[in-house]
Length: 390
Ligand SMILES: *Cc1c(COP(=O)(O)O)cnc(C)c1O
Image (cartoon, rainbow, N blue to C red):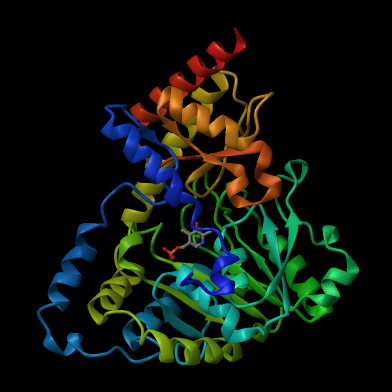
């Protein structure tokens, strides 16, 4: 078999199987509503698309990018942190361009950790934390997130021996898949914990700007600790509808970024310059597109929360992310519920088990379809529950 032991130990990306079944059912004529998609459904704002088109006219942009990413993009990231968080970063040493934050998270493990090292990851959590660690021979200790604690990781739930063993702690707020959010006090506490146990504190900030209800998401770089122990992964995929563009950054620990840059310079030579330059404009230009999309999402979130509640699915409102997270109805687990719902009603929701063992009793609803379709999905879920009650 042309497959390494490391790859054999990793399951294929969970969403590929669901997508295959979706296609089969759609081909058979079923009207499938896909609430499994984790990426924005609106186009990239026109001023960003215009900018990439302009940059494509300049042949100098067809050359290799500097390894750490072009200065324009890294300076734009620095400007973003100054504007949003009053945090001053050195764009030369404390910011690195990524080809999507998934890429950065993936390469972080072989860059910074050794085979046999241990990291603490949230459960439920974004699947690549686990799989990227496995591919690098790094062990994970999964920290269960509890509904009673609003799915906010509590460092008190980490045992002394796990804390002493680990080299890093990964957190993600607003969270995928739970939609949980935190205040700066969370990062202060996590940073103090990281100091005590000499850990690197890593924040996956993919939804940092996907916020509503007057909520402002903090940055881990605001925490009052030595920046050498902090790393934040930021992304334009969600906030500027640029998922397919593959552009993101890592910011914080200069030492960790220098290591990551060595891996990347040997493997990918950074992102296409016109994309970096258009992303720089996204971060520094007119921000009304972010607000407009957030308003749309907030409205959908409220509509869907109410529609699900009406059909008997209890789900809490959120202040950020693209998701609602709910218990599966009694008598089901996350796999059986989501499979039956797709087969019988053509509604795709993501089984919580895709995000870890703690997710087994839950499912995730993505808000990336129009309001009418969300309502239709809730109606179908209601009918499904009715039929299975009889
Ligand atoms: C979408 C997502 C990412 C990846 O975003 P890219 O920058 O497009 O790679 C990272 N983390 C979480 C939690 C996400 O949901």
